[in-house]
Image 1 (tube, rainbow, N blue to C red):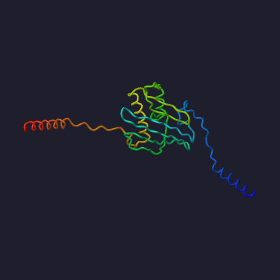
Image 2: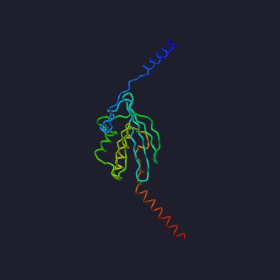
Image 3: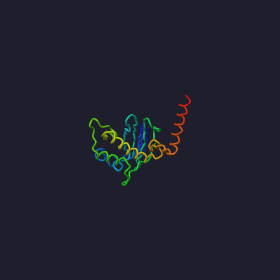
Image 4: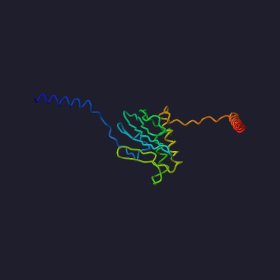
Length: 198
C-alpha cells in the first residue's frame, strides 16, 4: 500500500514538472504604459479594445481582443452593426513599428493629446480594458467623432486588408455631361408628347 502511494506521488510529480511552464509575471500598468502596450505586455496578457463606431442613425460596435503568446501579439475582432458583413474576424498578427502611424498606440496618443474627457455630452468611442483597469476615450461632437472613427478604420484596414467593411465606399462615376443632356432632352420630348396627346 505504501509503495502504491509512493508511485502515485512520483508519477504526479513527474507529470507536474513536465507540464509546469514558467508564466511571466506582468508588471504592465495600463494607465502609464498604454501608449507603448505592444512592447510592455508579456506573454499571456490580454488587452481588450472596445470601439463604438456608431454615428447619427447607424450603429456599429467592435470588440478587439489582443493576446500576447510566444512574444507575438495577435488580434481577433467581433463586430455587430448595420453595415457589418463579417461578425467574427479570426486572429491575425498585430505589429507596431516605430515609424508606423496606423496602430492603436498612435490612436491612443492622438486621443490623449486632444484631452477630450467625459463632459456629459461627449460620446465614448474607444474603451481599453486590461484586467481590472479601464481607460475611456471620448469624442467632442460629431465632427470629432467621425475623425476618430476614420482613424480607427484606417488602422483596421491595415490589419485586415481584405475585409470589405473596412474598405472605402466607392461613389458611382459621374455621368458624362453629353449623356445627361440627351437624357434630359428625351424626358422633355416624352413630357411634350404626353401633353400633346391629351
